[in-house]
Image 1 (cartoon, rainbow, N blue to C red):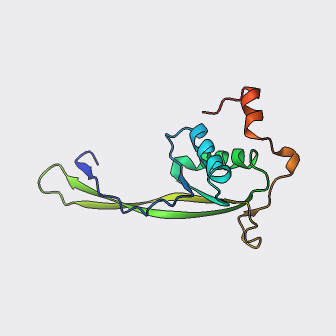
Image 2: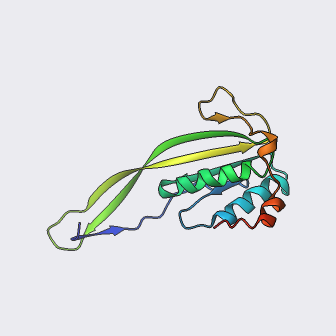
Image 3: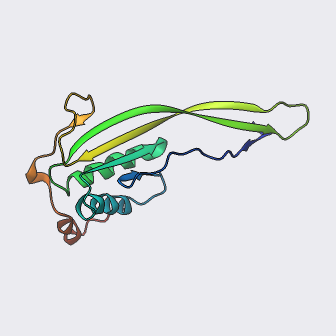
Amino acid sequence: MDRYQRVEKPRNETPIRENEIRITALGRMRNYIGYGMSLLEENGHDEITIKAMGRAINKTVMVAELIKRRVAGLHQNTSIESVGITDTWEPLEEGLVPLETTRHVSMITLTLSKEPLDTSSPGYQPPIPAEEVKPAFDYEHEGVALS
């Protein structure tokens, strides 16, 4: 592919809802956790949705688990899917034709809710035991650094 260059296309992303968090591989976990907790505790949302693709999936799972350990009684529903992304490549030399390649990227959507979710869903997890939940200020005093 050294004789081609990728053409950047405008993304047709869906708008981000008020109670939705989109995790990237470059973002800081501390920021995502703080924002998720503020949505649940200060902004009055009963449910948040956390989404990620590709390399950010493992960070997303960690963020959700840490929020569940700071906010009591959160039900979780997880769904995974594969999204096809088409890249267009323009030739750098004459005589070559433009190319289109499709790559499949994994995507995860985690829903954390104070209200019970669909227990028949294969991705459902009940709330963790109350003795495993510590309020946020307990973590701050223990000196746990989240990056």
